[in-house]
Length: 355
Ligand code: SF4
Image 1 (spheres, rainbow, N blue to C red):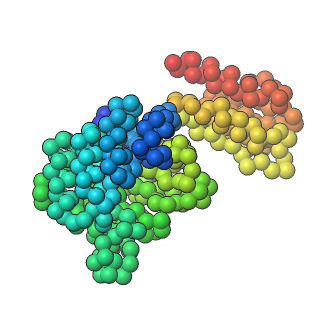
Image 2: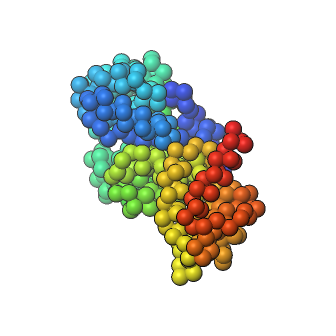
């Protein structure tokens, strides 16, 4: 792992992005923004899952006009996602959003970007320059022969330099492509030339399994290179899944500690308890846990005791029974049917002791 690259720190609501701030987990509401009730409910579910910043689409004036109400009824900093129309950006800023995302490839030129920056500066609102491979400027596409990493990073550099020139520096940058190597390279090129905080993600990554894998590979490479100040995992799924996957990636690299890490063996012909069902049940019961805890669910006595001992709490299975380890110490043998309750009982005691 490389040391995290130092970037400029910017404030968004009660959170900050960049500098030495924790890598922020964000997501995007998938409701029709004009449906305030549904959007507020989804944002509240995202907050419970650990989301720290939420973006909403602003497709028209009606959606822009309810942003203030959504913000008043929720706790997370609210980001307005703007494409094509200057008026939507200005209205979103008037509604009191905490951050604005602009796609420089489709906002309609520098003059319009300048007007948005001027208003954002007046209101102390940061802006994400969100470059996307699917909407790069025609000139850049022609020059680079397509949406290459060089084209993506150049687009971001052109617009961040322009914003700098007009005195706007509260910038976060993203350069997204659905192609993982292209995305990674674009961030590498940009970060060698500018110090703005990076919003990283793989766009249109897919449904939950392939999307999580593609996001994990892409974000894993970038984060291990020290790049990335806020992450968004894009999945064709419930947005809460995006938050879960983002934390799993960050926990795996030791970059955030929220919630338990559950280690479970793949099972094999030696296994004499139902590890798959047991691990799924443990995952389900610990879904809302916020404190960090390492939990092992292992099927037999080959690797089981070793892994269970290394965890805060763990199960090593035997023939229709198992042993629960707590901080490395094995307890009594427990029947398979009582193993889940025995494990949860120990987790409850650990939580009570550390409360
Ligand atoms: Fe197989 Fe035991 Fe390893 Fe699980 S811990 S995969 S049951 S050898």
